[in-house]
Image: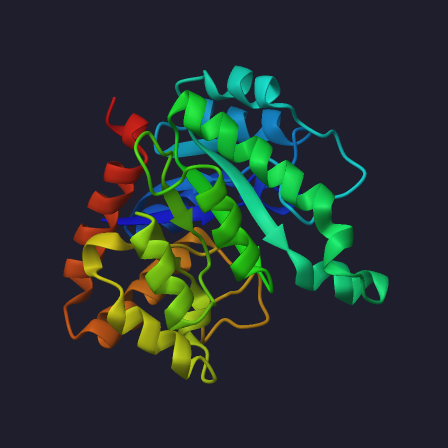
Length: 267
């Protein structure tokens, strides 16, 4: 019934008791999840989960915030994307917030390594024709500008999703104009997320996805605890309230959108 379009259940705390996690998902009617790669080093664990479980899929990519790891080339990404269980490129994008918080502040010019990594992912996605999973934080203008510069929104573009969306309605409109989907996480259940719920109401249902981003950002009333794909129905409930439709409609539409975007899941 429900699809968690973005989670990190290859992390050790989940692998330690995967049968229990899968049972929780089944009980919550979460019948599909996309496990997201954040480094090339961890990609084998992401892929193995997808290979071992028919209802789990994988991506390949390097999170923009990761430093000191293997830096992929277009060829690296293309090679790993050939596996039938890999349905997207990412998580990729730009994150200026984390760099400033951790390193005491940097100039935007210092983030060129992030921008080049992002371009590598976009070029790989366009070549292999798989959608991008976009992470953007405190960097929306540059994220959108680079997507446009690399040809997104035009013929032959890769397309993709802005995951865990927390940006403004203006940014959402620009992402939609480029042909991208918008994915909402448990953040929309937080009390202070009033503006974000307005974005939820605006984004057309046929362009919405839902996610948990597990183990992060557990929905209310589970805030402060480890997140789980089993909580994605709570995201669906809040999105349904924002749109004035039933939870069943949200489940059906977002699952159909997942299949439309990540076309390899239909193969």
